Image (cartoon, rainbow, N blue to C red; front, side, top):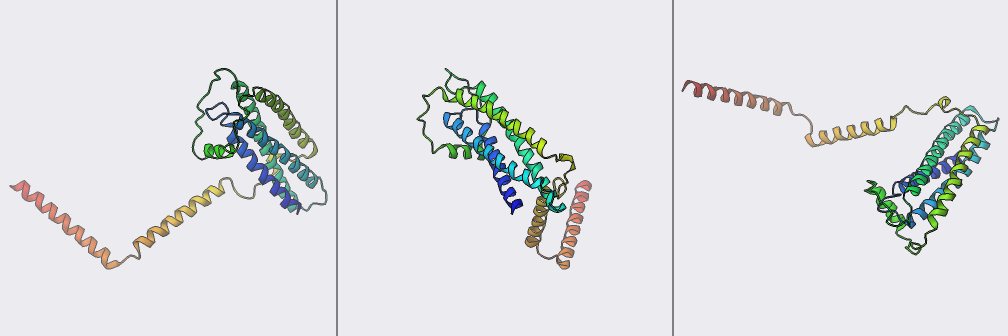
Length: 236
């Protein structure tokens, strides 16, 4: 039960961190509004809460000396994935702080840049922000207070990472993956190639020896006719 609970928390943290990354890509761009900054604030708070809960569960599990080797190996893999999520979250929070400082919301003629964000990710962000109104657009103090809070939260995430390493010593290079690197991509490519071969075979059907022989004879006769025509043209 503890392992399934940790997996569920880690999955939620991973999705929240990925969503936060998509939001950060829009900071300073033409889609940057106070609604976006509020969504950033809400999402990173959710990510921090999930990180605290996940870290607490994994710490208790890995400090249990009665764990069997198989369970310990699985919890260590979850721990390494959790550490990676925290590193990405901290990096995105630092990026959000830098972009938010460079592009304040309510500065006169604030510069906007084209971030290049388009397609599905920008549509998802737009849907997430469409339910909010622009009622706070005239308030100029939100982004300043939010950036100060973001600075404190970055320090807290860094302290969380240091505290994790102090409580549980799981070097990343000692954890073995359950499958080779890129195995999922290779399996997807193999499955696609197999389905393509099956589709071609279904369209072409079984090979008929009589048809193959007839095609060969027809090609030979055609080549002979062309060669004869060239000879006649040269002689004339």
